[in-house]
Amino acid sequence: ASLVTVLLLVAGGWAWLSAHAERSPIVIKFSHVVAPDTPKGRAVEYFKQLAEQRSHGRVRVLVYPNSQLYKDKEELEALQLGSVQMLAPSLAKLSPLGVKEFEAFALPYLFDDYDAVHRVTQGRVGKLLFSRLEAKGIKGLAYWDNGFKHFSANRPIHVPADLQGLRIRIQSSRVAAEEMYALGAVPQVLAFADVYPALQAGVIDGTELDPSNFYTGQAYRVQKNLTLTGHEYLGYAVIVNKAFWDDLPSDVRSILEGALRDATVYENHIARQQNDAALAAVRAAGTTTVYQPTPAERAAFKQALLPVHARMADRIGRDLLQQIYQDTG
Ligand code: LMR
Image (cartoon, rainbow, N blue to C red; front, side, top):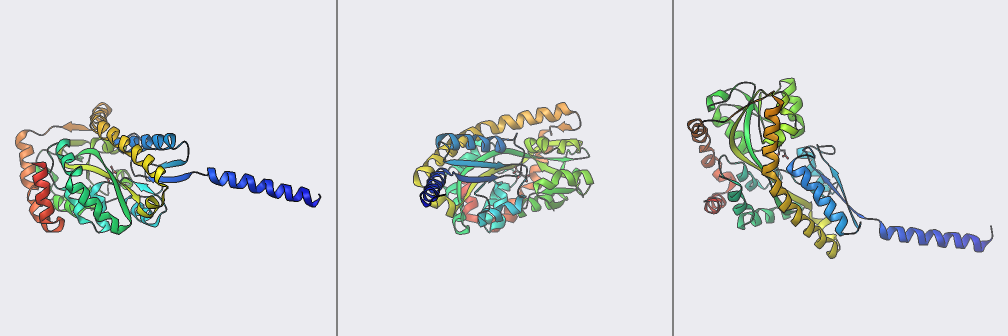
């Protein structure tokens, strides 16, 4: 080939490469630990759809559900290292980063309903807690609901004494551990991905899970009794690697903020529905007896668990706790 042909080929290749480089999208890996058909799983998919559409392909969101990439603890490390860009861990799981205040959300019977939750997450406390993440290289973008946790085991649970001596899986949370001690149960910290195998193997006796995770995480196959104690709220923080976020072109960041705003409305809208549907599916499966405690039984759980607030007040911060009580009250 003549020199001219070679030069033309090189120039052509260069033009192709640079055009392609311009079009190569910004990739967001979004990792999470639950099934796609959960409030969180669905909302992540919705966020992906909106972000990709509205950015006309400049952003690609790769979703990894079911701990495909990382389990609970590893995913936070991966976020800080920049191996993934976005997560939505449960609020209590942010505590091991050194922001113990997030464990407030795991306090028993803290919230009467979703409205009380939103007064906290969408108010001054929600803002303050997100600001604490920045020093850890993480930016908090949104709060997402799931629901309320209930106890399960392979024996009927009507009163706290029924949990005596049972090994109950908890999230990595000191508050949750104190709750188990208050009930005479034995807490066992496990990643969410390990709950079903551990139940199957008999390594743990029971769980505290929301209906959505109880159903989609298969616990209903190996737990005969679920009692609707609703003793603990489960919600999420949508978080992003801060350096990644700050480096985004500002128009792209605005598109993502808008997509997340809409995904948040959607998530909070479907959270209750999905949990109601999951509870109906558990009942229909017939492997688990769902028990609604009487008012007296519920009061017994409250009485046993409420002292955990005072025991954990120093850990969470007394001022913060007072603010939360004011905002929920
Ligand atoms: C759990 O570990 O029980 C939950 O936090 C899982 C989840 O992300 O909903």
